[in-house]
Length: 258
Image (spheres, rainbow, N blue to C red):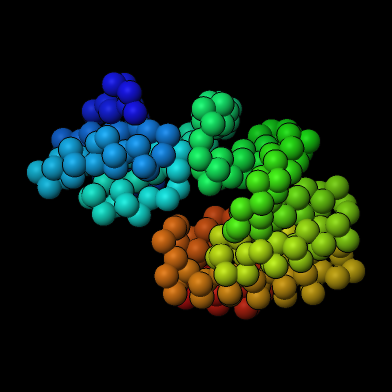
């Protein structure tokens, strides 16, 4: 981190809160740290942030890395910087942050996470979507050959295949995704998106595709409950636009009530 990466009481802190839509804004003094990854935060400012948290400050950290557990141990409220921007409707700025991070030659694991997020932004968040750029990002992610990111790359490529109306290719990518990501609840969530979307474009097998999506989501919820450290899977399911076709299914609604 450089001298500009720690700021206090300004726009970045408010952005993190707005993305979470809290009922009330904290009146406590607050500090926000911005860094490329959690390792930088812990190494250069961990002790200082911990002291602030223990003194009653509202401590926020915005980072491109979504491995946020260590930051929460410090007493910080951790947020994915680019995801905050995306939730605020600033997808282009999120892509700029990711491009800067890639240009800095990040560690391969962080590179994989950034490529995945870029791929999904190009796929779902831009209007109009940019499927070719999304495909480039997911293909680059696949070339890194890092588990469990391979599963996410296949999920992204499968999702793109659905929207090209190539159901056989979509299911092939989903199959490869399951081989790599059967133990990762976020990967299963994304693979479920493929089948939910297929139920809209491959009408002859709509019921089977929905059954598969629901089965994958059950597994994702079970894995998250068993020790997931990321976002709550039930919340992700509720917010996922791809699952709109599942909302008239009793099994899906029972899953949301867990």
